[in-house]
Length: 68
Length: 256
Image 1 (cartoon, rainbow over the protein chains, first blue to last red):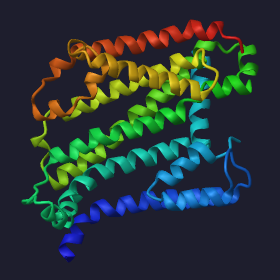
Image 2: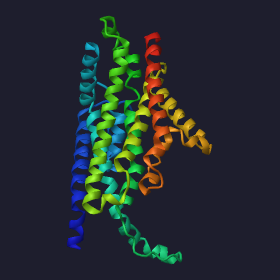
Image 3: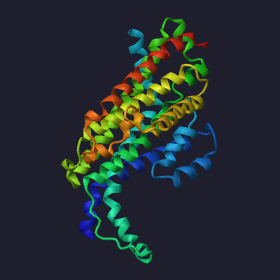
């Protein structure tokens, strides 16, 4: 099992880094803004967390982020 | 030319500050890693589902994953990245027209062609960089786990997809020259794709259509040679050029 997991590590580590940094950045962005193009803070937090394998953050930045 | 470079750098800065560049980079990187990851996990998934298959009366033997599976994932997933890029960029022109942010620049002497072309080149740069980044990541992993030489014509297949993306970006440029909103631009681009698929049902025409460039699977297996794509590639490049060229006079006549 150990060797098997090690075989997947080169794939999993970068994937985790990219996805979690995107997730973290998105959550910070949502919390720092009070108004959105559509929806509310709670809605976007739920969407971001449910779709945390990058669909959630993506949807937020396309549909929810307000143009400044 | 001065207007072009100035507006080009303004566009790049806008991409960075609206975080669009970051998101797109993340998408291309994630897709690049996902391709080998899904291929690598396929036997595991089938193993887990083996019991279900057994109860259905199917016996699943050993599944062997090769570089081919990884590159099949590549051509399955790259359209997703292209669609994200197109959706993000669909409002590039129309939002500026709607908000009137271009008017001060245009009255100061910036030509409209410079605006159209610099936005087009920004999209082109992002798409090229993104596609080849994604290709590079998949190539690296695929070479690490399997053998890339088992799959034929890898760079050419990616080039085909690149050219197809250029056509879609040209569609955005063209429809933006008269459409009123990002939604209309997306609708037009979608309709162009739909029309292409419809004509593609007519077998004789398929050879000449840009959608031929997306048929990488036959290229990988060696059923088709790059020379078989020549006609489609020339037509795609020509249509893209015509679309962008047509957008210039249309934008010049546009009421802002």
